[in-house]
Amino acid sequence: MSIRRYMSIVALIDTLRQQQLAVLNPESWDDRNDQLFMRVYKSLSKAGGLYGACLVLKRQPLEAYLDSHQPEPGTKIRYSEVKYLKLAEVKELSPGCVKDLPFLKRYGFKDENEYRIVIETDSEQQPAIFISCPHAWIDTIYLNPWLYKNQVQSLIKTIKEIPGCERLKVKRSQLTDSATWREAADRIAGKTHNPALTLAEAGKHKSNSKRSRSL
Image (tube, rainbow, N blue to C red; front, top):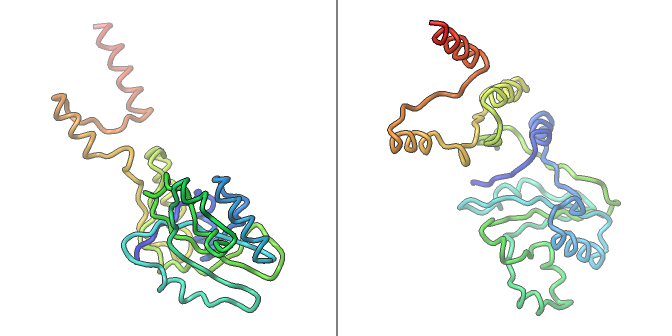
C-alpha cells in the first residue's frame, strides 16, 4: 500500500495527536469545478452531509485500507480513482452520470493520479468527519521543502514528542532543494560546496573582514 496525503502542518499535528484523518466538507476545496460537482451530487443524492478526501495513489490500490472502515449506520463510504475528462467529454455528461460526479476532474490534472474517499451521512453537514489513522499506517512524513533547516529540526522534535511518534520517519522534502543538484552545480562551477550560513557564522565572517582591512 502506498498513498500520499498532502496537508498543512496544523492538520498534520492534529492527525498525529488524534490518530484520526479529517475528511472535509468539499465546499472547502480549492477547485471550484470539484466543489460544483460535489454540491450537485449531494443535492441529487439527498445526503445530509457529504465529505471527501483527495489522496495520491502510488502503485497499489487503496481498498485494503478502506476495508477496515466499515460504514456506521446512516453513513456510506465510496472510493475510486478519479477519472479525468476533456471538455468535449464534460459536454456529454447527462443525468445518468450522477453517481460518477464525485470522481470526475478536468483532464489538465491527470498527472495528479488522484484517488478519493467520499463519505455520505444522513446527519446534517459538518466541517469534517474523521476516520481512524493509527501511527502504524504512516511510513514517512515529508515536510515542506521551503522550510528552513532550523524550522525543520524544531518541527521534527515537536512531532517526535507526540506520544507514539518517537519512531516515525520524518524528513524534509528535497523536491525543490536537492543536495545532489547543489553539489552537481558546484562541481560544474568548480566551487567547493558550502553548508548553510548561520547568523553566528555571518558575524564571524564580518569580524574577520574588518580585521583584514585594518591590517
